[in-house]
Image (cartoon, rainbow, N blue to C red; front, top):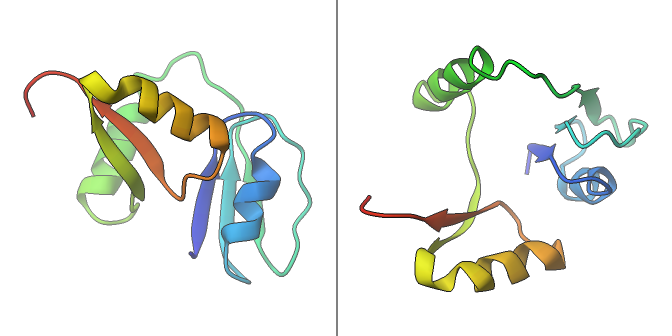
Length: 102
């Protein structure tokens, strides 16, 4: 994988392990991490005003500049299974719980 995003604390090193040499890792988890194997590491601080960031990210996804990796989409009735999956820290993408009609 050419890039990864680490959100939860203590996940940046795992994220770096799955990124290909020369790839990119962005962490908002607060983890301090050094670059290895030519991987560019960017550490972003949490922002209180997400109203400006979310539209930017949504447009980046829509335009193909940012690609989301989904591990699995769970129906709401299986939300506990989704939570269990995130707790293993072995997901290779985002775990999504679908609420309501798609």
